[in-house]
Amino acid sequence: MAVFLVFLRRSGPRWDPSRPMQEQSDWPAHASFMDELVESGVVVLGGPLADEHRVVLVVEAESQDAVRAMLARDPWSETHLRVDSVEPWTIRLDGRRA
Image (cartoon, rainbow, N blue to C red; front, side, top):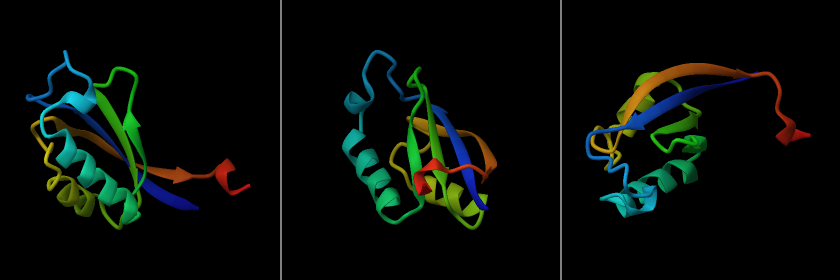
């Protein structure tokens, strides 16, 4: 069974709720950073929840600390997004492999 970490990130102090995600300051740098995490296989799934103040990241990594250190390099770290919680997630059902 695969085990992943589910990171819930919440909007930080520089998040402007009157603007969509793509119009937030430093968006291009953040988007590029996240694309690199996807391309390297660290981020398996990710995206905002309906309220757009919370983001879910499903990551495959050896430790929570390793991912926290990686996310600390995000240009939005602690300004636009901060880690709210981290939970291990064991995948028992996966229809993508059918």
